[in-house]
Image 1 (cartoon, one colour):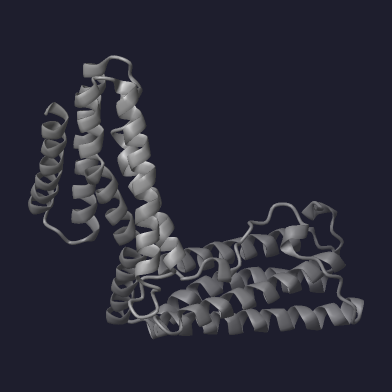
Image 2: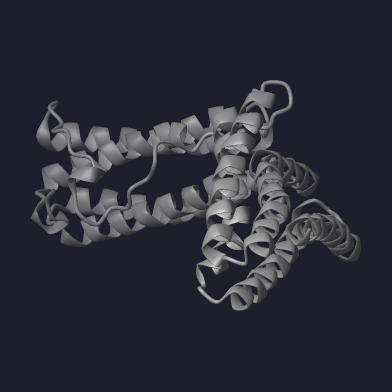
Length: 318
């Protein structure tokens, strides 16, 4: 990689052209990714892509006038100081807030690039164009706001935000919550039954570890194979399965780790405290994302956890 200060004016212009081409492609890819579910936002990004294309054309005209037809291939990742942006295809399915934040960061970065480039340019026409483009990026930010106002009236944006939140809940929160509930609740019985039956923290830890990992694998496969997402819109089955499996394991491991404490009753007391925290987290997630009132959410989770915990105590004490 090279330092920006080491670039010649020819290389700076070549880099500016490449940046505008890349930004145009990014905005176009975002527009295509949003078109089906969020047509209003897709139109905003399509118009922003067109404006980037106009900037590129101005740079091309000046480059031909100054340096001819050959443009060296210099891109952002060849120069130190630029922010790395993931390809849009790696961000699918697109999140509205993420792509809006991405667009804002791109505009700020491009504006700063043009200002720095203009400040070190010795050619009057190049300096003027780069300065004009820096100002254009400022206007582009205002234009983006204007485009949002034109294409995304408050009711449309609100509807898109609601749809985006619903999609996020279906694809990430719901499988994660299912895993966390299964891991936290279903492993209570074997862990505490083993602990009371053996009075040995190490054996309880081994049982809890096996139950947590086994439940994680089982739940991960069950979630991944239950629905391919094509009809329900719940996203890629592999991702959902991985989320569910991981959260199931985490939920079980939480109250298993205290049994690494060698003193039995200390380990039991800490494990019970961890269970209370786990059930509280589950209740909070249900209230925050699943629109369940806080008191019913807490009572429902506590009741289910108490039943399983009681089973473990009864079986372990028998």
